[in-house]
Amino acid sequence: MLTLAMAAGGCSATGTGVPTASETTRTSLPAASAKPRCRPAARCTTRRLADAAGVTFGTAVSAAHLDEGRYRRTIIETFNSVTPENAMKWASIHPEPNEWNFDPFDRIVRFAGAHHMQIKGHALLFDQVDGDSTPDWVLAIDDPDELRAAIADHFTTLMRRYRGKVDRWDVVNEPLERLGTGQYDSHFRAVLGDDYISQVFEIAHEADPSARLFLNEAAAELLPAKAAALVALVERLRRAGTPVHGVGLQAHLVGGTVDAAALGNLIGRLERLGVSVAITELDVPTGPGPEAAATQADTYARVLRACFRTQCREVTTWGFTDRYTWIDTFLRPGLAPLPFDADYRPKPALEAIRRELAAAASG
Ligand code: G3I
Image 1 (cartoon, rainbow, N blue to C red):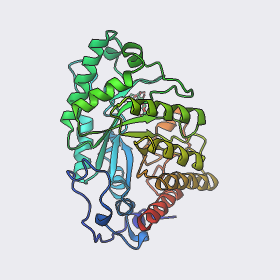
Image 2 (cartoon, rainbow, N blue to C red; image 1 turned 45 degrees about the vertical axis):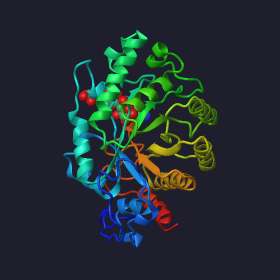
Image 3 (cartoon, rainbow, N blue to C red; image 1 turned 135 degrees about the vertical axis):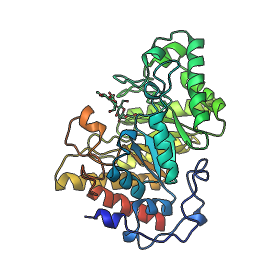
Image 4 (cartoon, rainbow, N blue to C red; image 1 turned 30 degrees about the vertical axis):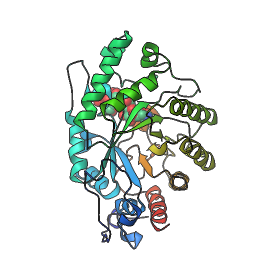
């Protein structure tokens, strides 16, 4: 297994180096000729391998852990992009009509800026079954004009404040039923109507016309009928001229495996609609032990390969250390879904990820 020292090993960059924060704000991929090469791969940090491959390799982060040295160092050595796990959800950052709690996300932005990382905004709108991401004061608004005005204020405040720092946004998170194929009956749909997704993408586009706007969905990579529903939804949005530029496939692979051919097929179908596709919340709960670790590594590898065989060039994991994972609370403890263990030691999954990044860099 890789040691952390090896994973963090130095290497020299012979290209233009890591892009500055301002260079990374509008494009996620450096031009091919500007790729910072790194050889031999075994001596490169995982982040260097991702940079060399022109791949956005990200993780969800929590401001609360940024004071922890090992947490910070592992991110710096491994990832070139971060997504706030919870800090930007409406209930966290804007809990009352006139109350903004910018501090946790500002800390993430400062950390990412200091280390020249990209930042994804997650999630402007998120109302799903048993979720607590939308504050009660928003759930209490039942007048469509009033709700649209609240959304416009929320989006505009965030998109202007973080303009030039956040380069892409999840505008609507999980618009479909969790295990079904219809639109989820969220508060926003109930008040604004079936076309609320188009309405809120328009609001986001108006708030920042240069921002890349994503729709982020769960479990489409696991459920063929939901995949078809997602493709149909995105097709409708594109036909209607909705400014949706990307689709995020979350990839919480709760069974521990994935049908990589189906995943590649789904990515291809979405790309043919004119959107870019990213893997946005990858984790693979398999449990402890060498056999589970091997299955997990293989699953991570197959997801990255399916992505890189298409135009997809972003993979974000939902956290990175088994020390902090939503799976412990929402599924059960001990499923160890991430590429580093609870003591920040790299697992076979990290080795597999590094192999795929190195192959993409040399391909
Ligand atoms: O911060 C409070 C803490 O003060 C309190 O003591 C504690 C008591 O339960 O709750 C803490 O807040 C929790 C928060 O996570 C931080 O741990 C919330 O209750 C809990 O609901 C929240 O869960 C998050 C969940 O989204 C709902 O927003 C998970 O961390 C986060 O990983 C998860 O992420 C989602 C993506 O945004 C969308 N896709 C699915 C993914 C996994 O569910």
